[in-house]
Image (cartoon, rainbow over all chains, first blue to last red; front, side, top):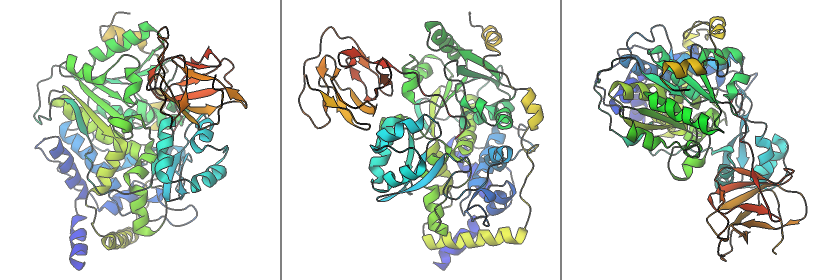
Length: 463
Length: 103
């Protein structure tokens, strides 16, 4: 046991650099990120993540998992492929951006945003994320009993087994996840169709055109980073269902979406669907975060697009993956992280049931997606790459994870001591850490569909 | 006519295809729920029926189906051939849920 502890202590050096190297290795890129980063606990503290773990009105709880270091490493890996694009940026800072801008704080077993909470079921616990007001209309069908608030939901959940709660929620499109850790490795990305990773750069005459069909946080963060890499990013929204984040915190929306041109399409019409197909045809990278069936029902099959359009990179962001029953399930950042085992490992380490961070699956997913997208375009593309938020978080927390519980306890004490010794103030600034200042960003946000005609003309699509 | 009480969370399957539904909400009382021209059956039932050849409709997975006054709502949990009907009136697809403003 003493040997295992020493081993873990040694591993805490250069976590971010080693994580970057692991990601680049998965993409068969031989270059390495030459970065030197602080101890993973200090990274978590300086970016404000450490403050987002624990109960309100009490000191934060230490999270002995390398979330901030992995975010730092993922951005460093991307910077290897896009030299100079991220000087002065912090990958770890992206994890806490919304909490900083929206003033969110740690909330125990409830997410900082308030929509997700851990609840005790008959044989374990689950994360329940009722992010949309309409989700409450589905709760009676989910639990087979009327339940209009979280107290009633808690009571009904308490008498049902986890597996049944998760399965029924899956049918209904509710974000419910088992709070469990499974040590079996999960790759952070998978190639579902097309070419294996080549790793070597292909010649390109111009920067890539990125078509962003995603919404909320992970996908828009991905395309924000691709924009920094030099891509021409076009955000596409359905007139019927625009990005819901437009109604959320304006400064945060602006940070994610400033400078992107915005196209809006009526996907209920043949003409709107034809325009969408033409935009996909003209794009080099497509980013989307829908369940596969949603685009299929519009007549768009990602696998076919990749087959017919040489060099296309298609990034599919999902909660749990594109295959089988997983393809039907939805997830948001908080519940995906619980499904990955984050809250379970946190409990193993400190004995507290907590939501860790603010929708942390989203920024981690967006960072990894940007790396996969840029690496794919750079090496010639021609593939459909799937990233599941659950699997990305799992990959992060499995990195360097001690195999023994006692070692994780020891690490928690060591990391807490590192923070106590440093006593550095967490970053409180809401500007400047990454990219543009909030006020400047607000001025460069395109309204819904503001650039539709300009983009169609620019990308050579007949109106 | 097999009339059935519909309770939120209740599940039924088509006797003529692979289609399955879950009840999201329904008024009190009994209803004649059909797919492909034949009454829908309990999930445990083994009976099947020949589909109505004239019915070219299809139940789409993930879509929510409502009656005229939207007092009754079903979710299609497995896609399959056949029009979903309640008391002989075809159900209509309901507009998808709006995205949340944050998660």
